[in-house]
Length: 358
Ligand SMILES: C[S@@+](CC[C@H](N)C(=O)[O-])C[C@H]1O[C@@H](n2cnc3c(N)ncnc32)[C@H](O)[C@@H]1O
Image (cartoon, rainbow, N blue to C red; front, side, top):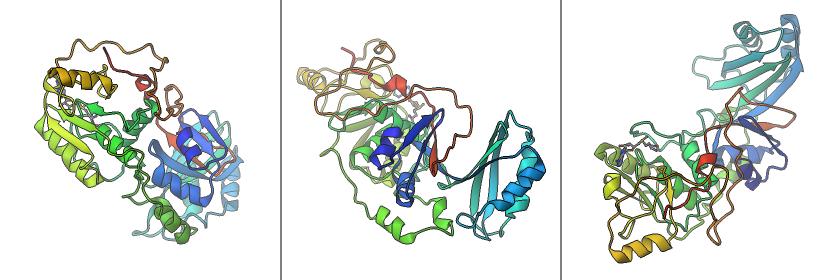
C-alpha cells in the first residue's frame, strides 16, 4: 500500500503494523479512497491528547472542533480500544464521546469515530471511507469462502503481475482475483462505483472531488489474457455476473471446468504453482499449445523458498514492496499526519515470486 500511496503523490509514508501513516492533501484523501486497491479504510486524525481521568477527557473533548467532519444531523458510532491506560473501560469512554458529540438525527448519515487509547494517549480519528474499501460494489454474488477484493488486489501487486502476462485462477469461485486483475489492467479506479463517508462532511469540497472523478482510466496493457475457472457451475455464474457489474466482462473469460481439465486460453496446459493464482511465462503455454497437449497437472509442487522472489519478466513493472504479514494488533496507528489507511495484514508475501512449475 505504501507503493500505491506514493503513486498518488503522498510524500511521507510511514508503514506501521496493520497501517500506513501519511500526510495527504484533501484531493489526495479523496483520491486515496477512490484509487487505493489494497486499503480497508482511510482515517483522518482529528485530535490527540493525554487524559488520565474522565474529567480530563471531558475537558479535552470540549476543546475539539468537530465541525469540519460532523454535521448536526450526523450520527456518530464509535470504535474504542484502550491499552495500558488509566481509562480502560471502553464503554465509559464511549459515553463521554456520546455526551460531547450528541446523537444526531434519526435519518442523519452515520459517521464512524475511531478512538485509540495507548498509555493514556488518546488518538481520535474520523473514518473518511464509510463502508470498508474492499466493498467495491460489484461483488454481489459470492461463492464459497470469497477473498476480500483488497486482498486479491494485494496478491496481484505483491506478485508483480504484469498484465501483459496471461493469468489464470483455476479455482476462481466468485471471480475476485480475475476481476481485480482486469480492473488493474484496465487502470480503472476500484472505488469508481461506490460512495464515501467524506462526501457527507460539512468540509466536503465538491469541486475537488469532481477533479478526482474526472480522472480517466489509465489502461496499462492492450488486452490482458485473464481466465477464471471453477468446477462449480454456481460459482462460475456468480463470477460472470460480478464481472458484468464490475464492467470487465469483456476482459475476463470464465469457464466451468475441474482443474484437471483446464486448458490455457488458446489451448494447451498452463503451468501452475501451488496456489490458485498462477502466473506462467508465455513461452511455456505456447510450447504446450503447439504440442496440442491437455493440461494434466502434476503434483502441485512447492514454490520457491519464502522471501526469494522469482525472476521478473523483462519489461514488467517492479512489484510493490510488501511487508511480510504480521498479526494485526490494533485499530491503527496515527501520528501527526492527516490520514492513515488501516490495512490488511493478510499473507501477501507468500504470493510474491510464485512462478511457473516446469
Ligand atoms: C475458496 S473458493 C475460491 C474463492 C475465490 N478466490 C473468491 O474470491 O471467490 C475455492 C473454489 O475452488 C473450487 N474448486 C475446488 N476444487 C476444485 C477443482 N478440483 N477444480 C476446480 N475448482 C475447484 C470450489 O468450487 C470453490 O469455488
